[in-house]
Length: 357
Image (cartoon, rainbow, N blue to C red; front, side, top):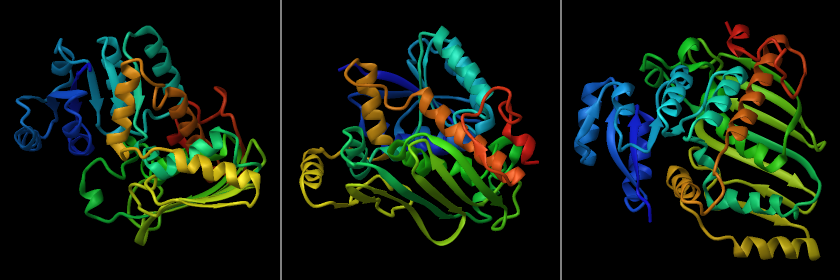
C-alpha cells in the first residue's frame, strides 16, 4: 500500500486532522512536516506527535521534494493563494472549508487544478458517518420515492472565548459567519440527499455575539425537484444540536443529533409498508459501517489516490456549497427570493462580502 507524505499548514483544526485521522492511518499517510506561525503551538504539536520538521512558512513546505500532499488548515482568506501555490508546485491539496471566498475564486481554482498534476480535496468530513451513508445510498439507488420536505437545524454555541482568536468573526478574514463556518456542513449533507437548489429566501442577523458576521439565520429553499427545505441556524443554543430530517414518499429519514458528527449512527429510517419499504430495509441491512469524520474521509481519499475509488469530495461539490451560500447572502441582504444558478454577471459572483459590510 502506497504511503503518501503530508505537510499540515495551520495547527488549529490541523491538529484535529492529526489526532482523528493521520495518527491512525500510518499505513496510508505519513505526516513529515508541520507549518504554523505560532511557534509555541508548532513545537508542542511536533513534540506530541513525534514530527521533527517544523517550519513557519508555506514556501519552506513547497520546497520539500518528498511532500506529496499539503493539508491547508489556515484562515479562509488565505485558502485561494495557498491552494494555487501548492498546485503550482505540483503537489496535491487538502483544504478546509470554506474552500475559497467566492464563485469567481472557484473559477480560478478549477483552472489551476486543470493545469496541475496535483488535485484538490475539499474537506466535508461530516459526510463520513454510517447513518448518513445509509441515507445517501437509498437516494442514489432511487429507493426513497418523491421528495417532499426537509429541515436542517444547526444550533450551536459560540461565545467570547471562541472569538478571542483574532481572525474569527472578522469579515475580511473569516469571510462570513454561521452559514460559511458552521452550517455549511449540514447544508452540504442536505443537498446530497435532496438535490440541487432552485430558489432561496433567507433572513440573517447578528444577535449572539458582537462580531462582524451573521450568527443567526432562517431560510426557506425550493429544490429543483419541487421539494421544500427549511434551514435554521444559530450560535446561541444552550444545547448544541445538528439535526437533518427529510420526508420522502417511501421513507422518513432523521439524523442523529450529535453536533459535530451528525453523520454517525443511529439515524432513524421510518419506511413505508410493502415492496418499497422492503427494498429499503434490505439496503439498510447491507451498508457497511465506516469510520467517522476526518478519519473516514482520508480513508476514502487514499483509495482514490491509489485508483481504488471515486474522488471523495470534488470541486463541483465545493462550488455547489458556495453557490448556495452566495444566494443566501444575496437574499438576506436584499430581502428577496434569489434563483440559482448564480451566474458570472451576478453582483456577488466575485465577492459576497460586498453585501455583508
